[in-house]
Each structure stands twice: as C-alpha cells, then as structure tokens.
Length: 367
Image (cartoon, rainbow, N blue to C red; front, side, top):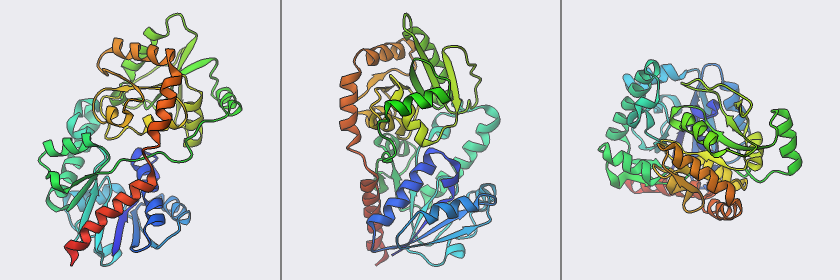
C-alpha cells in the first residue's frame, strides 16, 4: 500500500512534533512492505523538514510545499478543498496531522492527541481561544465525517471522543513512548547544567508554564512543601497565558532542548506534574526514564500513564499537591524503582507496529 503522512508539525517543537518524528522514524524501520509519502506544508521552515528527512532510512519519498498552516487551515478545515491526492499522487491511506484535515478519497487515519481546547476552553485566554476552538471544531467535524480509523494515545482521550459522539469501534488506543535520549545523566552532567542555569542546591522540577499545566497551584504547593527545606523549584518552558516572576526560590529556564531536559530530570528531586488535562502526559515517562520521582494528577490520562509508579494527587487542591511532594521527597527510592519498571512498558517500536496494524485494517476495505 502507498501511505501518505502529514509531517508538517515536526518543526514546532511540541508534543505533537515529538510524536510525529518518532512515529515516522520507527514506521520506516518496522514496515518494509508498504511505501510512504511524507509531505509537509511550510513557507519558511522547509529546510528543517528536509533535514529531518535526511535522518530517515526506509521506503519513502518526501514532498514539501510552500503552504503555511494558516493557508492549510483555510483550504482544508474551512473550505475543505484541494484533495491531498492533488499534491502527492494517488494513495491508499492518508494519515492526517494535528492541525488541518485535507479531503481525500483514500482510507483516512487520524491521530487525535488531546481535546483540551474543546473540553477546557477556560484554560486559554479569550483573545486566542476563539480561533483555536474554531480550528479544532472544524477539524474534528471532518474527522467525524471522513476518518475510518482514529488513533488516540490513551483510554482517557478515547472516552473523551466517545462523549463527543465519535464511534467507539473506529478508535484505536496506541500509547506514545520515550526517546532513548532520556536516561539518567551523570553527576558531572548535572552539575555542569546547574552551573549553566545558575541553579544552586536541590530542586524540584515542573515542565510547562501555563494554566493547563496548573503552574500557579504548583508554585503554591511548592511553597507549602518546602518549609524547613533548602529547596528550589525550576520551571521549564516559556510563560504562556500567565505571568510568573522569578525569586530566590523560583528559576524559569525558558525552552530547553531534550538533551538538557533529560539532565534536568536526572538532577531533580521530584517532577511536579499535576496537569489539569493531558491527552497522554509524556513528561511522566521521561522522568521515570531519568530516575526522577513523579507527582502527578489522579485525573485525565495522567493516572493511566503513571500506573502505581507515581504519587497521585488532586490537581485542584494545593494541599493535596503539597502532601504529594512531601511524600515523594521522603520515599524517592521506591518511586524510582517503580518508574523504571513502568517506562519499560512503552516503546516507539511497539507504537509503530500497532500503527501498522491499523493500516492493515485498511487493506480489507481496499479489496
């Protein structure tokens, strides 16, 4: 079969970018029967897409077009014109992206990563949420009408889709995984990175800075839990939709590359990740791989991903989060051991194999 996959989103350094890169890389390793067309629309970042393609090996061809995301949103989500075949040739399967849903006569497979803008619009500022919600609603409406299979990373996201009226029998749960780059760093690597970012002493870590990540409650819980301790909190990410000020106990690092993030996990006493909603919650597994104890939410997909290897807390209760931090600080060894066992249950190789199985479901429909 000839399979087209939209890889436009790989340039944005998001969770969806991470998923797409790892999925495509491993699909080409495990699938020697089918041929792949990797296509992308971008106006200014075509070179990055080509650089990624140069790292791949397998049966594929690359097609890049000077079409920015805004144009694709109009063409595909709003007008729903320009079938993907017009850009790439005749195909058997079309695996669509996270942003725009192109029309196609092929068997359509779509990955839905999460439904945050639809389910929790209050976690986004009013001046941006209208456009985000409109885009996602339009895309979801085409998915509901046209997609033959929908891949989701968790049972939680599957249930969210069913509540929105999607057919259960076309949804396939395929978890994501951790890159092999995430592993325990050496003490020397940790100390060098702490020196670079001016982090002194012990610290706990939080990844992502926005209302959905629950940043304000995280900081309040940290202040409660650090009583009598020489402890700092390190926040990774750029403040989005909120204002956070640094002080002697709070460090904001901004964006960091995965290599440095792995080291930050390795040096942290605890990852505090009581997000209010996630489609999967990859930082939990990243922390497990780096031998970092985790405190996360008892809701959404987070408890599903963590299993019994993390301290689960009520993300809406500052005291619950603070108690969770204290528990993790008191018993790190047990959590580290459980985390290392838990992360073994997820692999990109298996994710790719299960995705190929979804593609095989198309074969019977094509006969």
